[in-house]
Image 1 (cartoon, rainbow, N blue to C red):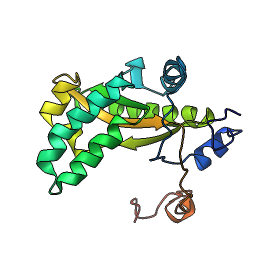
Image 2 (cartoon, rainbow, N blue to C red):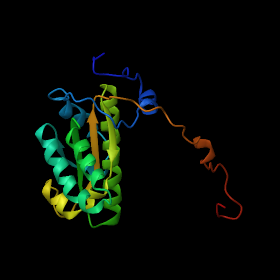
Image 3 (cartoon, one colour):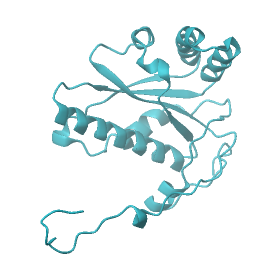
Length: 201
């Protein structure tokens, strides 16, 4: 096990899904060279209709993380009521080992947009699970500034594109405890007969 890991790699897909946590606190050491591409090459096997592959990626690490922190700060300092919060947010983002921006083209056709968003969301989950297997923690963020035109423009997101996820990643400083999920049986409707009314109630 890598000395940076705070958890053992999961064995099996079910275990990885259940054991993965959203990590907010990261150690300062950078991720190994080539690991990002390795994880993305796993993530892109997400199902996507017609193999449209509706995604592209912008990654920030090292000095790039400081640039991203500045870009976020420009928005947060105007939107936040507490100036100290804006400064702390800038420092937090600037010190994250890796931030991955996952972008998709916004197809004007609703069905295609829905399919593409679902596909990119599947890709993000794949990325998080593949990272967890390597001892890398992640958290999927959708902070308000990812919708701000000035922030999007500054980090290279083009008109007609949507930021689906800002994924922070690094070796965990701390791993949160698990939180219970609602049993699927409580939310499941099984139809095993033809309703006499012709309608499900």
